[in-house]
Image (cartoon, rainbow, N blue to C red; front, side):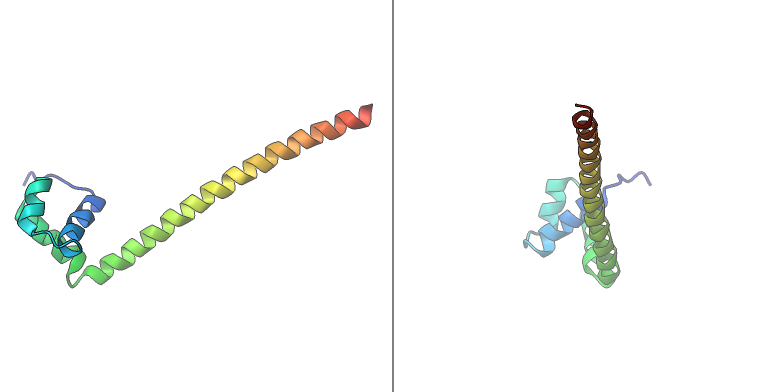
Length: 98
């Protein structure tokens, strides 16, 4: 069994092309270079009975992505404030020496 591994995002987008956009399974499979069986397997995984489990996981991943983004923004803001505080502390020392 030497099957190629595809990222989750790739599989999800392939399934969306069939389920949301109405393309035929064989058409999407051929265009993406995957087997029709793989497409059907992915559809059952992401759109079938187990999809609620996948939806919960996807929701958690989306929340993690948002939190990482917010953490990055807050960290940048903190670093800017540190630099500003250091700058103004230096200015304050210079103006008191005059």
